[in-house]
Image (cartoon, rainbow, N blue to C red; front, side):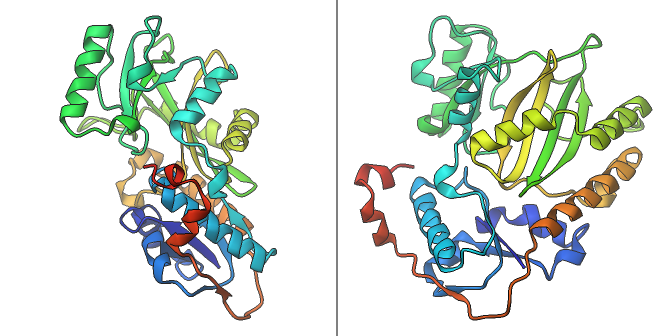
Length: 325
């Protein structure tokens, strides 16, 4: 049995899959909302996926880490993926990848943008998955105005990021967004999206048009070969993430990481996929099946693990630590 820990309102990422493409896993994958843990006295044995680590608060992560330690201590044989204390947020991950020469672009908080920042830049929030929150900004005046607009519209400064734009278009002015899933030790390509916009979220075509055949063939080759696996594995390891999906581009043969999502949309309904890509979706679904089977460990039907996750455990940490957002 696999237990998927997530924020209740964000659990659609896996429940929609279980209602559609992953229906056969409905009895093997169960969602446990983080909100339900405050009243939990015991939990069943199984594999636990700690997801949504970028969305939950710092205090919630400390309590999630407490649960991780309770489960691992009581049952060392359980498979627990994404240790909360090892999690590296989007800002720290991007900064670390730049500092280590893995990403070509840097990231800043609004108050620390240097004069030598490489324009253009754009704004993004650290904890959401809606992509860029501004157009490309080409000078300090545009940047200052965008930050001011974001603040007046309720943006929390501590979550706002200024990211240098990394140009990855090819000679035909096309961009490519790649994704790879990690499920324990199993890695599988998620998709390759091609388009003429610098920010790509999903494959889309204009009414009456179809996804070009050469794009279909290129994505098929990507899914079959998983060509960036060694680079992808290294970034997952650096981020301390054992379950999730990495999104990236490629520049001069090196991946440029946009983010790692610990609670990604598993798969969109089959009927919502572009007809030309449906067989690719089937390939991805088959690979995800292999991933689920690899972590669906069998355990004897013995009593549940007693748990006691009390907020007073936070007193073990400096108050300024668990009061962080």
